[in-house]
Amino acid sequence: MVASWDPRNNEAQPIGIIIFGLVWLVFYLPVRVVRSRQTGDSQVGIFEKTVQPFFADNCYSCHSSERQSSGLDLESYSTSASFTKDKAIMALILRKLTTGAMPPPQMPRPKQVELQAVTAWIGKQLDGSEVRPPQPQPANRRKSILAASLLAG
Image (cartoon, rainbow, N blue to C red; front, side):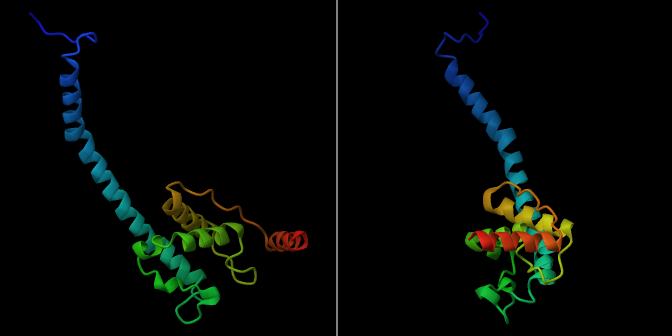
């Protein structure tokens, strides 16, 4: 007699579940572990190659260990791990960058590509999804938005 699977046969179901579990452990789990390690390594690489240099070029003049404007020392975040521990600071930086509040209007604007890369990386660290890149705004548009918000509030 040839054994066949019958959904009404309750004796065959535990064997199928065990086989499925073994297949999942052997094939799927190792791929998932390798993928998560690669993602972690690439996130560290992005911080070191993109985020930290962006901060150095655009933020350290005011937010360094010496000046610490608004109590923020971005130089103290020397690794991806040290930066991503402080979710509140990450959220604040993300908000300031995406709204155009930082760098301040009188300071040179960062390149849009660099700004998008940094905000996308920070957003991904905060909630696992990339943030929509900020739209470029001419300086006079930023000033009119700021003036309107001051008049409204």
